[in-house]
Image (cartoon, rainbow, N blue to C red; front, side):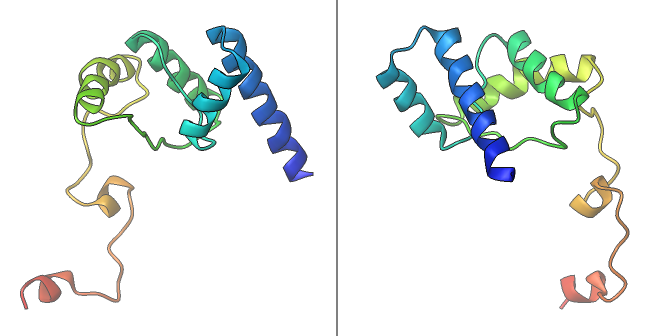
Length: 121
């Protein structure tokens, strides 16, 4: 059952890519091969923010792993152009709660480790 859902999802994704980009079968295959099964998002900063926000509001994800074709330029453009839009819309934080990943996620320190002792060895 699960495999069938994924097949339908990828079939729909491929059709959307094909329809949106007026791609030949060969161009579609190249685009999909490069994405390695990940969703491809492209467009203006507003269009990219729209797609990320849509997934957020539909509870389709709880975070994103971003893969850029090249660094640092595309990463910097994303940070400078897309992140402010998402922050303005209230779907991307402006501040962090602490200085560690655990604090950012609202998790307590694990009780079985004394981090200060470990760091000061």
